[in-house]
Image (cartoon, rainbow, N blue to C red; front, side, top):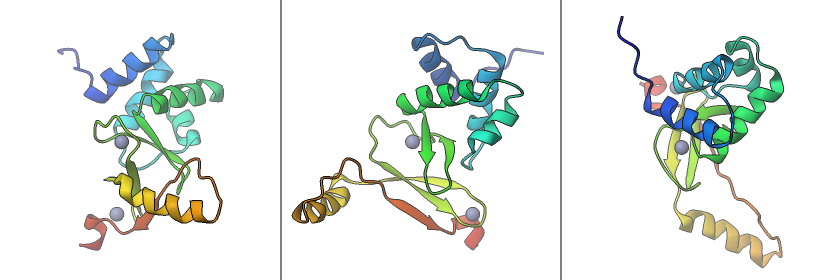
Length: 144
Ligand SMILES: [Zn+2]
Ligand SMILES: [Zn+2]
């Protein structure tokens, strides 16, 4: 059987972990592959169980590094983690979550969209550190 070529996500993810000085252990690889295969945001618990036995701290650490490298997003609406579906350097991406199947779609959000929220807040004296937009609804497949 020929060796399986790792997916682009797996390559980028293992590079990110190595550059932070982490070894690519079996459980870490399992976390990366579980994330790569899912269109649904996965909870820390899902990943912990799927990885077959690393400690929880190791799962959090792996996720933190992948998040820093913009390879994984935390979807606060469902408190889950999702492998990035498109390569993008910036954080100008928000996520739409399907209420029926949980599929997450990445949505580019322009600076202007956030800027209008920013200026509304500034006039009330609130200093925003981060603005996130949460979108929930029904995906194309579920509404067909
Ligand atoms: Zn992304
Ligand atoms: Zn759906």
